[in-house]
Image (tube, rainbow, N blue to C red; front, side, top):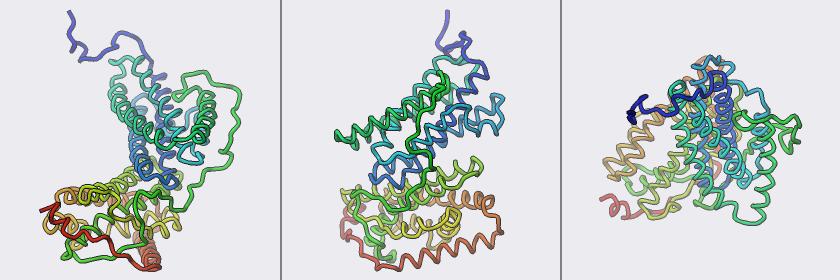
Length: 426
């Protein structure tokens, strides 16, 4: 008699499954695909105008960075060196991603994710679980269950975005043509996990003959009104200060876009650098969502408060090193001071505004910023070749540039929240 908990509840215990080398070969391909997906999605955060797609890409690039990290850690347990794990597989899989990153618009980007890469990745994960010996390969089985759950959710969300965006015959035709081209490249590489036959005939590239360059210009849909900047007000003006805090959080979308540049345009860094930057990027986009959610909760309309634009006029003109020094050391480290800083923002929402939702958001915003400062200090220490004084000077140079750009145009008043704050939070 057997029980469901025999073999610790594991199935597939008496089939040989894959050996270590075959497991490692497949995981190597899957880890590489997840890594390239991180870069693919991050690289288009700036150029995609649709707010909700932009936000989704920020989340998914972070999750795919985590998947890569998990799979690479598993490779080191399967007799694969760190150098080998960090390299591209010995197939033409790289060519697929080299081409896919050149998606010309949101239609092509979503088509590549929804109809080619993500479905192939999910199918490869399911095939792996169906074949491997659960008992022998349990560490992989466990982590793949987590990855599959996240990738399945990602595909559902991307499919919904695809259905919204690819909404005309012209767009569907463009999507079909791009999908056909990328599918040929994927097939030629032997599939996403490298287990299929590899084609000896090269597929002609359409765009990847030159490296992809992220456009440095602001792209926004009309989801939110926009202003250059808005007035700063004192805490005693409770409604106005709360409104300013909501719009400031909302405007962190531009910081996330700036971090996408740092992530994608800083080559040859240790893998930990990209994992950290992917997290930082997603956190800043989450902070923008804090503002969105608070506006919708407080005012019944997510677009009731504006996004400010002035950050884009300096972030997109800086080198990645200058940009990261400004964000991590110049701006975020300064926010650790009390008062004012992040702690004061949290205390304002708790004690003066008395608004529970924004209190929670600012509490986590504060925790995130502490993490970001530690990340920046760690990564900039390795990245910047000068001493600490030179790094601080670089950050100050960025702050001065930021201030000069900010003053190019006048500030605007924010919408008056009036007694709606009292009614909603009282």
